[in-house]
Amino acid sequence: MEYCELTSSKKALRGDALCVIHSGGRVDSAAPLTIDLQMQRLGGPSAEVWYANGPVRAGRDGIVRYAHDDQLMVAVIEEDERACGGIRSCAEIVYAAVRKFQEECGFPHLLRMWNYLDAINEGAGDTERYRQFCVGRALGLGKPSHKQLPAATAIGRQQPTHQLQVFWVAARNGGTAIENSRQVSAYHYPREHGPVSPSFSRAMIAPDGTVLVSGTASIVGHVSQHEGNAQAQLAETLRNLAALMSHGSVRSDTARYQDLLKVYVRDPQLVPMIAAQLAQTHPGAAPIFLAGDVCRRELLLEIECVHLRLEHR
Ligand code: 3EB
Image 1 (cartoon, rainbow, N blue to C red):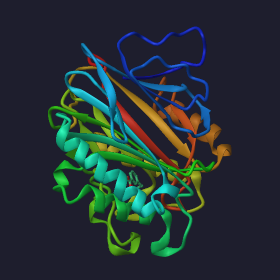
Image 2: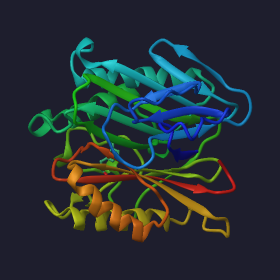
Image 3: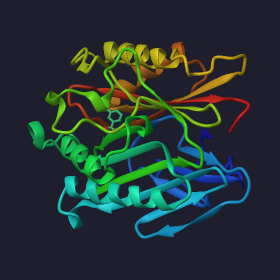
């Protein structure tokens, strides 16, 4: 996979594209599956492209749109919350559909999931929409063992769509979920963060060695750090990412790696500061910047990462 520019006429989409995930507004994608993030892009490449190895099949199964090759499946559900009776039941309906589809599709291993919803921090205490989303997600997904939880991102849109959008990458063969030594596993978060702890792992090592890193923020243990200080939150987030990459299961052989970064910021004015810092720590990374709300209201930014072995796609 890669992050690339698809809005300019200079670059055409390769014929072996499996899925295009874009935030460019006017990306004319001929990919078997195209997903529009419906979020404002503040900088960086307009698209994330997953490539196929060999023949591709694409289609629709109920509310699921999907495309797959022999090893990998990308699938998406977009549901209008208003037709589901709110975010909690919408998440339950969507995740029950994910679970059913995953049981039948032949790609049983969830590797990575993205969740985008409107107004993620609206509502006080346990009624907060993110917490209600977590309740519905857990109900719909059922009780998989922690080992099988995918890496994930959950971000709030700043412009209303009324839509819960969930998309995911699943595989024929299982990956290895890993946790962060600096952080309490999200599925073990204490009660103070909501009635149901979030169902995701910190990162998933895919069968080909690619590390799919969850949205990572300024949280140490289970506690948000540096409220109101974006620069310090960024530094803490980068320490969390570094700690994850030093996990014993992440291959650190002589192969060359590239880190693809996607940065979500609450306030567009933070982009220049973050871009300057990332140019130091991740030279040549060309991060994607999106305007989005982190699921804890005190957190100003979140970074997800794909740690790619360059020999592989
Ligand atoms: C955190 O570490 C920050 O609910 O799926 C990051 C990634 C976060 C995924 C999710 C939430 C989720 O708790 C928030």
